[in-house]
Length: 125
Image: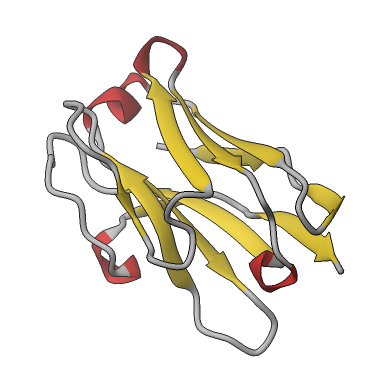
């Protein structure tokens, strides 16, 4: 599974951005997909994830109520809508997928097998 993240950019605090994660394989439709982010000098951290069988997505506390993750299995694409952005949201955002057939959402980056290249999100104050 190859993942391609896009949609990053520069936005002012309080603004919005929408990220997309497109996959190259149909197996994407049976994988848990998550978004992580990494700010300079910091560890890569979990942002949000969604299971392929539906159910409630999982969010990091820091983005809950501001970010929304969704997926379109027919298009092999997962989206991250980011609203009310803050300067502390500035980071490189990565999408990642767990192995096919797995339905459990995990927040640890070690649980994700496939990774995209990342897209930069910069929020100015």
